[in-house]
Amino acid sequence: MDDNAGREPAQSEVDSSEPLVRVIDLTVRFGGVVAVSDVSVDFHSGQICGLIGPNGAGKTTLFDTISGIRPPTQGSIRYDGIDMRRKSVTWRSRHGMRRTFQRHQTFGWLSVEDNVLAALEWRGGGGGLLADMVRFPSRTRIESSRRRRVAEILELCSIADLAKVSAARLPLGKARLVEMARAIVDHPRVLLLDEPTSGLEESEVESFAESVRMIRKEEACTVVVIEHDVGFVMRLADRVVVLNLGTIVADGLPAEVRNNKTVAEAYFGSKTQS
Image (cartoon, rainbow, N blue to C red; front, side, top):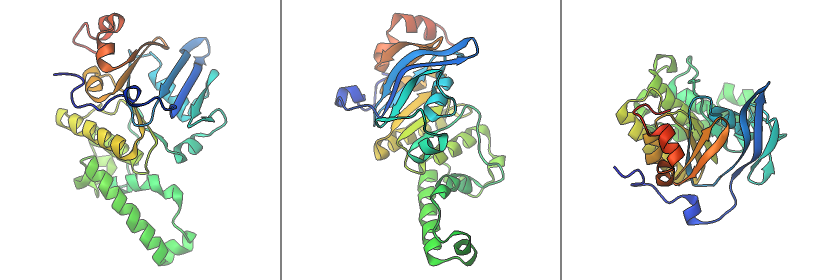
């Protein structure tokens, strides 16, 4: 199969607009261990970028720093031209930067529908506690609108039939899809997906990929995907960045990265992909 079949052009093939996210000379240290070393990389709106590399390459640390969970030791991150060094995780999330994690983090005591609805509740409902108690018409309209949006996203993620099921009862693959739905329901501008296909069945992987493509098209958002399934990344991404030992060793179109000798020896030389 052609790894580039069906993909839309990479941003660099379309225009030269300023990147939505710019990582500049980023270094992250844990004591004497350097997890990310002097990394500079740009991510553009409307682009799906795959981020691959062996365990310990610094991929999740890079996500943690972009999303605000971990401060950089040195360097900076700019988001839509704004220096992010003083911006909190909450600020970033409320300005459209969303992510999922390696370990699934659903709210087990809530239904699938309410897990996804929770991502919209920060916007408030108008009228406060009193409105909730007496069901003011304004509050009812807002909640109805939000539940319609949730229903659309559950359908997009192929889990509409699980809307009323408790998240605690879901197998890992379905829980991953709930996290995806929760990340995209509130119109993301940046979507950081950390090993999203872990636990998915083969048929679910392709459905998931189509959901990512659709949300990219509808929201014109930046999507960055960390994955150990290199074949999946090559089929999905417009562009692939390879990290190893905290540094970027390749960055380009999927075919270019696949044909890179260093990358080929490290990641495509055996059946097991890192």
